[in-house]
Each structure stands twice: as structure tokens, then as C-alpha cells.
Length: 199
Image 1 (cartoon, one colour):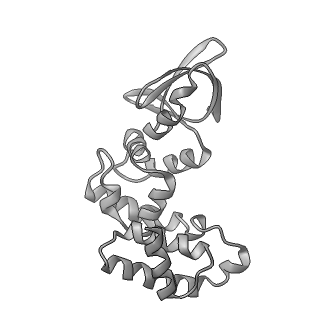
Image 2: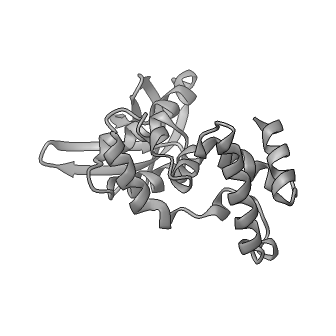
């Protein structure tokens, strides 16, 4: 119903804001990270991408600073056992990039740190969203480089496993290895060395 809303920021709290548009104050539930980012913008115009949720418990309007957050929110609420407030809690506990890394690494421990998300629900989230999250979304590489996917995957997998053996979590290891890969570093050993410097 509403694609986005733009208006004066009237109030901000930890998980909600009031946006005044044409003399009407709209209450929007937002991720804590977004609330923190705009807390000093009271009295200024802000734009939020919105999602209207209608349920037996009432109507709620959710707002996000980026379309990427909104798109991920929609994916999360389609996971069995995760409602709008649970999805908001996940996006409050980690950024979209961190969530992508956790999903690709099947790091349910990191995901289950979000409020109201247990290990079982985190596992279900990983299973249902893993095919919808792409490695290329995390790496700024060209289409030509993407043709090397098989070799890239082998290097990344081996380097990630090596870092895990050193005690790093799957998400931490994958993030560091991908950052090293984005710098043009090739080969498992070189990736591990560069990733360790990133950490």
C-alpha cells in the first residue's frame, strides 16, 4: 500500500519513530540500528521504505532506511516461525551484510543471538533463505570474474575452513576471506594470511 514515506522526523525511540507527513503523525516500527542512525535528525525530513502489516492483532507500519533492509524483512517474515517483530529483531541485532554472511556460512549461533530467535528457528531461517542469498552480493566482482566461480568457491571454502580450525566462527571466517578475495588475492594460503590481517 505504501512504498515509502517522506516527512519530518517528530519522535525517535529505540524501536519506533513518528514521521509527520502532511500534518499527520505516522508511527513506524524500525530496526534499532536505523533508529540510532537517525536519532539526531529530529525536525528534519527523512525517507523510509515501508511495509504495512495487517493481522488479527491490529495494523502496524514498519519502516527501513534502505530498500535492501525492506527486501530482507519481507524474506524473513516468509520464514516459518518468524513474524514481523521477530524479523525486526533480527535486523536490529545485525546488518543485512552480517545476516547474509551468517546465512551463507550456516552460522545459526550468530543468528540465534537476535531477540526471540532460538537455535531451531535460526536453523530453519538458514535452510529457507540459503538459496535466496548469493555470494556475489557480498563481493564487488565483475561478470567476467564471476565465470571463475568454481575455483573461487574452492579457494574460499578451503580458506574459511582453515580459519574455523583456528577458532573463528563461520561468519567471521567467510567475511574476512571474502574481503581478501575482493582485493584480488588468490590461493588458499594467501587468502588465509590476508584474512588473518583483516581480523
